[in-house]
Image 1 (tube, helix red, strand yellow):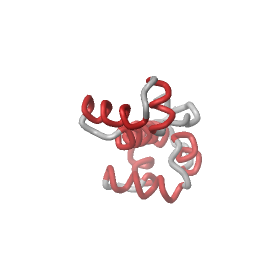
Image 2 (cartoon, rainbow, N blue to C red):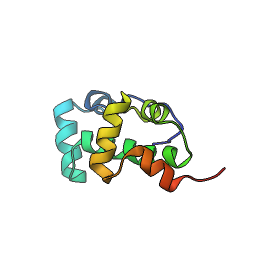
Image 3 (cartoon, helix red, strand yellow):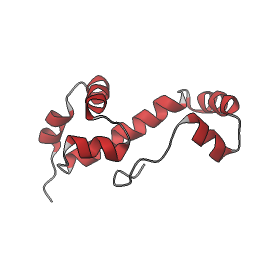
Length: 98
């Protein structure tokens, strides 16, 4: 996922359609191939993209919107759960000066 791109629909129906499979078949095949559900995989992509945007110093609301994890409170909760640190703290610790 390109961290500068706006979020595209990455839910199971959209992904299944792109793969030319039914939702059930897509979910089953994806999980068997990757060892994780499509939702967990997409969440990981979004959170990884968020880390890159945060390191550029972007505001939390903007990052949440760009990676498709909004509202910002939801983004903060998911980020904290996954990385054990708030997005704001992460941004301050990993900020890259342009």
